[in-house]
Structures are given as structure tokens and as C-alpha cells.
Length: 99
Image (cartoon, rainbow, N blue to C red; front, side, top):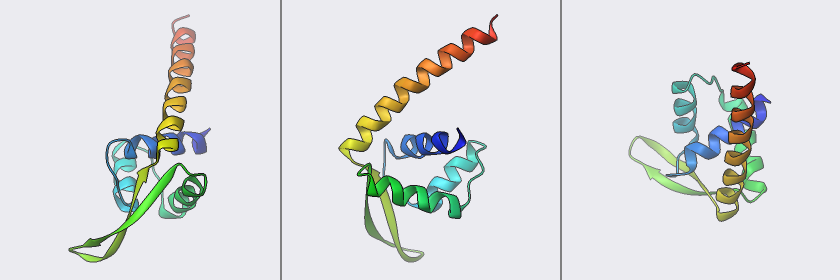
């Protein structure tokens, strides 16, 4: 379940703007999701290989070039499906909590 949630969270981070791995880790940590690079990089590679992410190298003012990831059209569509599933699950859990 955590693996699926991490995938969903990464796609949510990238829905508005491209980001590099360290930015994503910082966003996840801010959301109280502890993720290490050894977990994130394989996930990013898999999502890219599945056609859900693309990347481009951008020069950095403070070090080597960075790989910025962004959602593809397929990634946006998949995120929409995940969002719908999340809303259904959330409603179900909320209903059970109110019993």
C-alpha cells in the first residue's frame, strides 16, 4: 500500500511543475513521508519506463546539471485515475469511521 501511495504522491508533486529528485524528497518529507533516494530513484525510473514521466537535464547554478522530471500526457491521465480511486477509498474509510 505504501508503494502505491508513494507513486501517487510523486505524481501529485509533478502535476504542476517539473522537479528534480531532491526537491521531491523535500516535498515528501514536508508531508511527513520519509523517503530516501534509494527508494525514489527506482520508482522514477519505473515511471519513466512506463511512459508516465519524462525528464530533461537543466544546468544548475550550484553544482552539476539536474535531471528534472515532468508528467507526460499518459502520466496526467494515470494521475486522474489514481485521484478518482483515492477519492473512492477516502469516502469509504470516512464512512466506516463514522459508524
